[in-house]
Image (cartoon, rainbow, N blue to C red; front, top):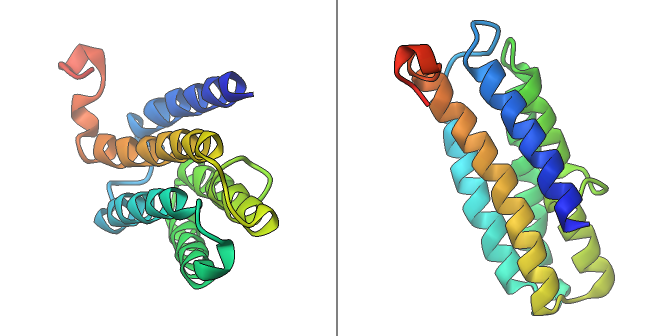
Length: 151
């Protein structure tokens, strides 16, 4: 299952890179970058805490999910930002294996063991790293193609 997720995210990441390097992508957004970096840190901190009972952290989880919803709505409101909006949708979706799934499963199971924490942490970090990379790439779009000295 983990390999399937990594493959799917790799494909999505490549799509992000392609779209970010074209004029069809929205311009760099400092706010979007802040959302991605801040929400990554908060999400991973909660994953670490998920060995504790969910009820002790439910307020933090609710706050995180609300802020992820805000980031999704912000991304959705930007022109030519469909790929990034889809990534945020997946992060919040309770069936996509990321933060939404983590929150729902933590509530259902009450706490996670180390194996589940590690698996969720890896998937969540990768999803956010993709968003962060896209925003950084948008900032230097003229540097991202191989023929212009980029990667």
